[in-house]
Image (cartoon, rainbow, N blue to C red):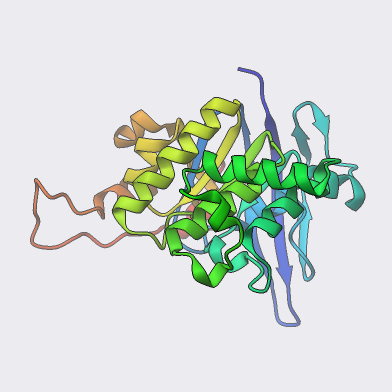
Length: 280
């Protein structure tokens, strides 16, 4: 499997007048056209890592890396104009609570069509037709009616689907989904995951799926990266997660309640400060 994305020694720091915080500490990984899960506690650096890849970290944040390649292209010397061409068209990102990323004063159809016309030379009629096809692809009923609705008129699950449609309409090679199902109930969550799985496989895309839910990532993704304090603690195949060896990963797994093995209490996750500085 050829590498679609290669990251070498990514570092992200935020400097204030009091201190410098290392949000990401030497993250390195490579992925192909697969589903890669990134899990860890809040503040472990999952979202910042993916934002840094797209050049979305603003001052006082500072991003450095030894190497960054996407589909064979070295992005290290890429300027803002080049990154703007890559964002959306080649790499798309669904943010946390994506429904609230929609413009409240524009219909959802206009917003999706606008995302398409930015990256493709299309007439308004062509953009509308492509938008209706994309709404159908994410299993939205009556796409013509939904096209003319405003964000406040749709449910949370439909808002998630609309944002996924907007990110996928330019035809990217890599989709980054930052906890896209965190605010959904179990039934809608499974429906949305099935939609994403079908679209990723049908289009031959790569997917980075950020989540707190280890069981969800283990059942949905191909490989998993476990992060703590801005470092990668362990990388394993999703099917081998239960055999993970790092104490942090074992601690996360032990904190999950088991319906068939009820305990009187859940263990407390213990963290070793030395993990922040150890070699990956």
